[in-house]
Length: 317
Image 1 (cartoon, rainbow, N blue to C red):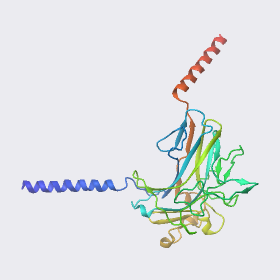
Image 2: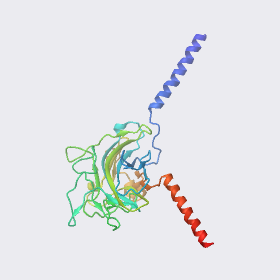
Image 3: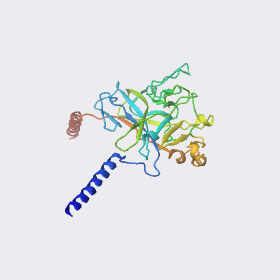
Image 4: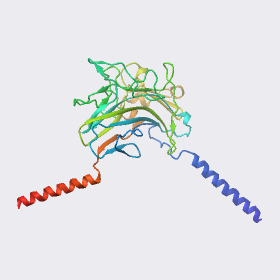
């Protein structure tokens, strides 16, 4: 009798341990209902902070003195928030957008330029392995605010949060990342599964900002572009797959979601802009570049300030 009870107890313990192992193999987090299936996330590349101190999440780099002359390298990722735990059901096909820098620190983005007002041939200096189809391009640099620095790549630099725009000047100034393929039609590319939450992320591009002047801080952001001009197929410039569902997004109100299985998604017929489209993806926080004096330097500044204040008081007395 005791032997039988002991055996039953061991079986129960064994089942509990096995359940714990299986739970440990499953993704630790899944996308909650209502959350977007895909996110863009800009981060400082490993070793891309120059002499500055980069935060563990790659979102901040702090310099102890003026960073003028330093170059900060940033990576842009497309992150698929799948819920089925199958990495092969998530993929990236095409992504389009702009980069912008704002703040008192100023500098120049790496990108393609112009000669005599005409665009030079497009390059792939900002494109990465896996997203270097012949249609991919770095994007063209612009002086967004007339201060003499190339603080933007692509024209869509008003932080519209995914809102569509019709303006393209030159005709195709944006950063484009097409999944690599030998033909004209790119194919879905596998990404890297993140152990922390089960997401699948794709490194779709990288660029640099060479800091040339100013002081204080700067914020770097990626702005997805939703095209609303041109043909229907040309407008679909955000294309990805999550949990086996294909998303083909644009700013014209006639994007498609998994057309073979579901037909036209009514979400797209309601509005060309706003939550109807932006609810299908979001953008992570900007990358921040800061000047933060070392404690010793800050202490010396405080002592000097106190000395000056004391001198002014003695003069007043």
